[in-house]
Length: 138
Length: 135
Image (tube, rainbow over the protein chains, first blue to last red):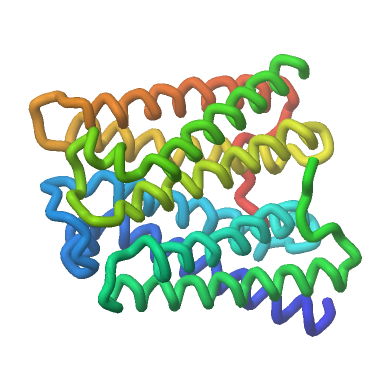
């Protein structure tokens, strides 16, 4: 196992923990998330809960990668696209779609976009080092 | 094998269309379902974005169903995560009476059950474990 393998293994584990934690917070504390981020006043914030399921799933993918990153190389390739597309969506939200002024939700999205972009670039670098395709196109 | 590929392609198409619809018509959906009441329904848009990603996973599973069964198994895990929460929302968490919001979650929940059942059937036929737990 090279140093790069070890570094990526730590990153994959961190991604697994962060994604699962984020997902569980959205699923089990949807009301609180709604209040803190000031996004509506729904009696039951179903869409925030549903949104929380996706990071849990992505966290599961990272868990599999963490278990055996060489065996599940295809999952690294799959998650690269997800990681690369989210900073774009989040940037669109921050700079165009979310109404001003700059608030907590802008800050949360900015932090998420930067962390996601960092992980995506690390995955791209890792795949290039392994002489693998960065994005699978079928 | 042909039937499995049809199911995977069907799932890819359904998720892609639904994802793009949620992504691009988020404000209209918010008004139509009368939920959220925010200026920017980003949560609906992000769900749409994730669904497009899931459709990409299904597309790859369709392309690499023999070489990479992990993709089919991973998407099955996604269905297992979704089914309990969607049914909980519809029958327990969402306040009554039964409305368009309930229906808009019940239909995807039934779709999830259909796709999960189909994937389980085909994975069993292939002799693959349903959920890989790593290790």
